[in-house]
Image (cartoon, rainbow, N blue to C red):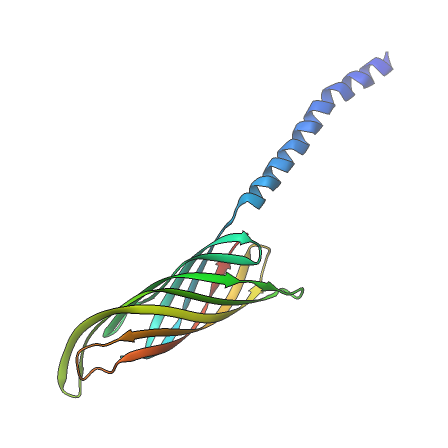
Length: 184
């Protein structure tokens, strides 16, 4: 009779164990299917028509694989006399090293809009312009966990913003940003 009870217990446990393995495999498949990443940055941009300005950065990435992603990025400088919004589509290549560091070069193309409301050399300037925007950059990331990385980014922006005289023409700017990345 004890053999019968043991066989009955095994027969009852078998579907539960199989269901458990099935649930683990489904959860693992869902984790691998998550192909989206998000990043946010905070820092400064120098070389603008208003000197150095505070900048916020956001990016959304779709990962084709763990090393290549593309998606929109946005830089926003909302404070002071200059308001600047830049939006571009960017491609990133993630070089992952064994020590938890990642090197991420990226490039993109998009549009930038700048609005300047200030006084330059005694003349009132209230002007805005929209131009092409070509971001070229390099991020150094520290992988804090499998899906979270701390980053520092150096970004060179190529554009051609011409605001009313006596404001200077803005052809390039350089940004230094610090942020967090979430990814697969």
